[in-house]
Image 1: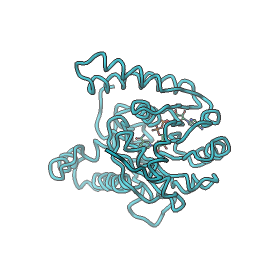
Image 2 (image 1 turned 90 degrees about the vertical axis):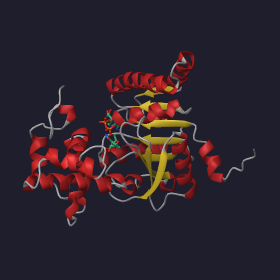
Image 3 (image 1 turned 180 degrees about the horizontal axis):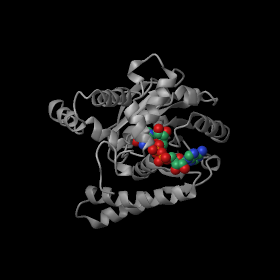
Image 4 (image 1 turned 90 degrees about the horizontal axis):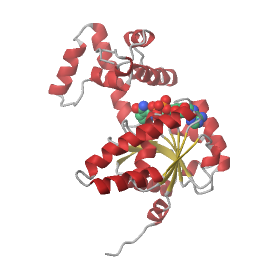
Length: 303
Ligand code: NAI
């Protein structure tokens, strides 16, 4: 069969070298999937210990992926693993790691100043054609892009945790994002095995914009004594068909993460009642009840 390549397909075909900055929960997942899908990857973190930890986590996760993908065929599985690992390089120097990048995906700490400082430096160091993207959950992409001279080659690539498992990728455009950049990000997302959806640079994009206010409305129901956490969870699972109830979901995501997002939005958009913080949640976070990761949130967990 013959295929015609549009300019965007040509551009997307050019996304071969990917630099992922931040090797925490999300960065490690993004780097892993990129390596598994044939990209040459450099995974960067300022913290060497974080890089080492990510490498271990990736090795274990790739094992699971290979086992599922090539059930029974150990030879193929071993080949898949060694090829993916072979495409994954690591570094603690971001500026030195973007020289041959076609795409930079940033997944560092959720702090606007730190992200801006990083992108400002990378903008000087990266080639002209390199596309920059942030995986931020709650910060405006436009505000991060503002410090660069490549707003037309800037967008949001918002993955979901755990990255190797979750199929969705939100592709976020700022007004300046060029059509070529947008299409290249979409094609890359599909090459990563994800389903892409397009969204404007609006707080929380699609998923968190709906999910975060829903979670806080659930806490407000609990605060008013309308229903128990357990009953609200059962109701939403059996009545709305959700796979997890809102309290199970908050425990999984981390109460501190929920608080962090709502506090940022409340400050930025004080007039929006959907973005109001919750006293109960603030108290739980202050007490160290963060959910699954701390052993206790709305439920208790065995450590
Ligand atoms: P994390 O805390 O697990 O990892 C962040 C990593 O960035 C750390 O290893 C830290 O050492 C590193 N880092 C910090 N400053 C750096 C710098 N200047 N240069 C290089 N590395 C630096 O955080 P996580 O959860 O992976 O989140 C990362 C980003 O992804 C955030 O923007 C967050 O909003 C977003 N996100 C998080 C999701 C989640 O479920 N945790 C889901 C989707 C997006």
